[in-house]
Image (tube, rainbow over all chains, first blue to last red; front, top):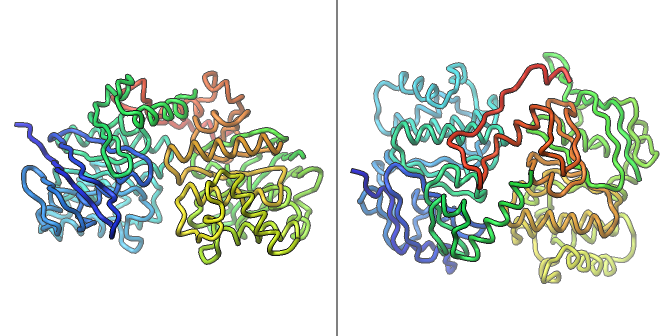
Length: 250
Length: 276
């Protein structure tokens, strides 16, 4: 049965007196990709980080596969939910080899068979076995982002949180990473929650999209409605118009 | 003001032999908007920075000809270059977070640029800075002038950098990925601001970016670079007619809002592109 994988109910995230996310609710079905778009400061990354357990100062309800989340997450949560960050130059430990980076989640979650899992993990993201004993600085940006994805997937999570996973990459590398993420979702039945500001990129991967403005979801719509311009909120229409002007110029 | 570049080469000596990052680039710039597009490592930034002789220390630059308004950049010493840098050609860099001085107020930095090139008293310079902040469409220039970089948003910081570049009244503006650290809405605002300032002041613009649609939207002419060479030159309006498979590949691997596909086309790189 396909159920709800991620649920947020009246989620509010605070930084001191500032409410960065204001009573936001949404649901993500299992095996689908849900996108959060908006301008910088709209609260989309804050929401993602609260879900990931990186920001404990939130109120409301968050559920993963029906289980309520506490402000501080258990180890079992991180087994289930993993995150891929925007900048592959900053998110990998510079003094650890790829082998060490990929071993860590396996050791933490007490997996056996580490050697075979790392080999399989690299193969799954189309990295040659030769990168295993290299350091991050010896890899290109695209290869690094593949390592970050392999690290997120190696403990076999059900949910991936993607924070602008391609915006630091060249367009040709972006295409490869988007294809990879699409293939992995289908192959493993993963659920994605993806944050981005490029509408074309987010709609490429996601079936449903929420548009955020000043901490509030102003509209939730299907990718097809966004494509065809079947939108209700003026902010969504504005973002769509801008994307058409700038990305479909040629 | 014209810039003439003939057969520009930039090499980096490495223990395993020299690496040529720019391999014989020739171009002419006037008071127009030119875009240089390419992926990381294509040599686009090095090409533009060569005009200002702002290359990493270990880089070696050669050219048959490299002139800025008749001044031979290859032979020019640091003093002569200083009269071009900032004064006649401004450089806007990618990330205001790293390019602004974190311990100096925004207004103070703009005033410093103003005084370095135009002289005058501190008071005059500060007044000019506030005027420049108003010109880059900052609503409350007084407040921003007294703010420190960490108190400003990315878009605001980029406006401060632009104001600083405008202070000496340059004839050429080189913008190296000026908006890639910003989100789509702010990106459009900053590009419109640059476009507006460039046409109002009659400056030349070199826009370096990896974002082909953005460049074609704001420039008259676009140079596409691949592995240190210009592989194609196009009028911005003619991108549909791009001939080179690399240019076509750059366009085809972009996801589109209106024309969805299940899989994006990857770039298939042909070794023959390296031959130039």
